Length: 301
Image (cartoon, rainbow, N blue to C red):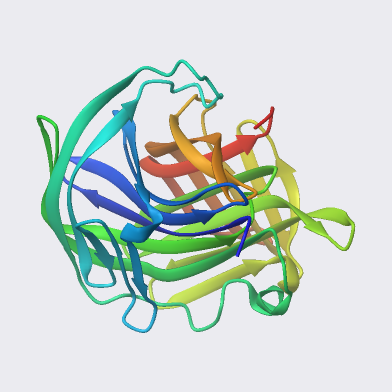
């Protein structure tokens, strides 16, 4: 299969901050490989592996790249990675790299799953550019991960897991995820190629207490604002707005026709303001310094 990628995204938050771990496989007409990315507030790390070192068991929910294991039960890593110094989110062939050793084990608690596929009926459409999946809205994380001289500890920490597959990341998108005291939130909006044209679509959820709110284009949601510092959607009488600072973020490698040649930006722990209203009633107002925000305004591969 050419021009294809498949990857998982783990976000873990603990007393020493947040980190994201992304194992993936990517296939193009000229190259087949797999990779691991790690992102913290202090930087991003990347390493590629030969395709022969990739193993996946979808029934058990486990992926192995080299000696590194990723699953619904946790993460085990032991490897040298390159720290990417370019944090402007732009492609730079002269990126200065520094080798960092990353080792540790993280153990996950029971996943809090959505009742239905986040893609809804769009999951049935073949050859979509990018398919999204949410595996766990929230779960516990215990263990530690050492990145060079830095150790990140997770004692009754919080985790989230999602995945993406397809040919390329969207040309333009905004994604955010945040843990609440009694739940979690994820919201994304993107330019979606479809039937020779394109539209701006959205998917998301708010797990709050015992209730789960779903937001999606297929449920009638529309993207009202998608700018430098704000994302706002409407769905019936509901309005969900996210405000965030404009910042460079750390570099995240992203797929373009199966190749990991694009660079987007992600902050794994940043300021944000979330507001959900129903008519004039405010259902949620959360200001945080611990939000994850990822965005792309494509300026070239």
